[in-house]
Image (cartoon, rainbow, N blue to C red; front, side, top):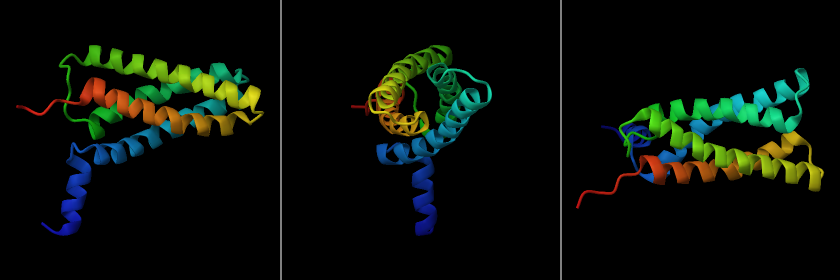
Length: 145
């Protein structure tokens, strides 16, 4: 196996947190495009108030994130019941949504930033919250003794 293929294999299959974080970054990027694009479309084209459209867009991103996280990022699961796992994943996401809304409101109303800039700031902070809480809560298994 060449060095390149070893590195690629590690990136795609490793359970090491750094590799999972890189994969989660990719998954998060795809979910972000859906979230950010939906936010813009709902607010600018459909006339939905920015905090309402942010919540709707966040749910779209959350669903995409869950599906891709299961396919690409986390291969070991604490729970065998996928519905329960999704419910917990969504609850963590709802807390992330609360953070998203609070950060966006603070950035827009108190700091006077445009809502699209506020969304970028919020995305970075909520990204790390979601990754680490989901990894610890749902997808991390203790090594066997």
